[in-house]
Structures are given as C-alpha cells and as structure tokens.
Image 1 (cartoon, helix red, strand yellow):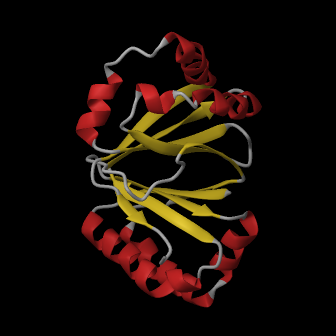
Image 2 (cartoon, rainbow, N blue to C red):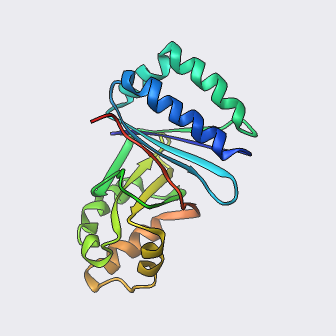
Image 3 (cartoon, rainbow, N blue to C red):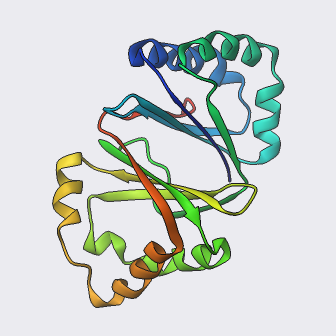
Amino acid sequence: MFIQVIEGRVADPAALRAALDQWHQELAPGADGWLGTTAGVTAGGDHIAVVRFESPEAAQRNSRRPEQDRWWAQTATLFEQQPVFRDCPNVETFLAGGSDQAGFVQVIQGEVSDAARLRKLMPQLAGLEQFRPEIIGGTVAVDQDGHHATQTVYFSSEQAARAGEAKPPPAELQAALAETDELFQAVRYLDLSEPWLYHPAR
C-alpha cells in the first residue's frame, strides 16, 4: 500500500467537502489503484486527507491525469496557503486497516525515531481489538525520509473512543503500546469528529 497525506488550513470546509464529493463522483471511477480516502476538517480549521493507493505507481498515474490536474487547480484555491503533500511508501496496517465504517477518526502525526522498529511493533497490537473493541483498524504511514509518520485510527464513535482512552491496557499490550509511544516525538492530534470517508464503487 502507498499513502499520500495532504494537509492545509481551509476557511470553508463545506466547499472543500463538495470538491471531494465531486472527485469521488466524477474522477474516482478512472483512478486505477485508488483504495479509499479519509478526510475531514478539525474544529480548528485544519484539513487532512489520507489517500490510500495500491502502489506508488497507481498514485503517479492518478496525478498525471489531465482531469486530475484541472480538478486540483480549482480545489487548491480553497486552501488558505499552499497545502503540504507527504508521500508515504512505507505503510503498515493494524486490525481492519483503513475503514469506511468509522464514526470518528483520529490522525496522529509526529517524528518517528525508528521506523523499522515501529513496523515490527504493529503485529504485537493484534490483541488491541479485545481491549479496545471500538477501534476498527488503522494505518501507519511513514514519509520517504523515514522520519515523519502519520497514524490514522478508525473508531466506531467518538464517545466510545473517549471512554476507551480511560481504560488501562492489559499487561500483554502495555510494553508494545509504551514503546510505540516512545518512538513518536513532537506529536500532534487531528480529531475528525465528522470524517469524510470515500471508497471505490463496489
């Protein structure tokens, strides 16, 4: 899997969502290898989109489409400043991975000190679904430089997520969760209380 992360501030979230709805309706059918998009705007006006592709090549093919260029030229004007793009060739999933059924999504970003170690820890989180059943799944995407990570966690609801945060983890998960936390520095949280979830037509 390959993930592209797009970040920026927007003044009119409704207009941006309309633009993404348009992309999904008109351009998604021709986006070969596109797996889904999770997007939204935080209460503070920060937009983030986590776009999943089968491979870097699929993402490049999509970017080269003339209709994609035209759509982005219009959509880019909705951002207050030039948005930031992060290409992430190193992607790990846990539990169900990216989900279209989430009622709440939390994106966690930060600098990661050891991306290889972070990837090895992912299988150790297999028991997470027993401890935190409100977590549907998630992805961890590391930039090309190997130092910046974007973790996207999908929850059944925000209420359930907040309740789960207060629960102490079982002993078998404590070490893996603690080490995962230690690998992240300069962490910021982007809460998407109303996530925009897009997927290919089935």
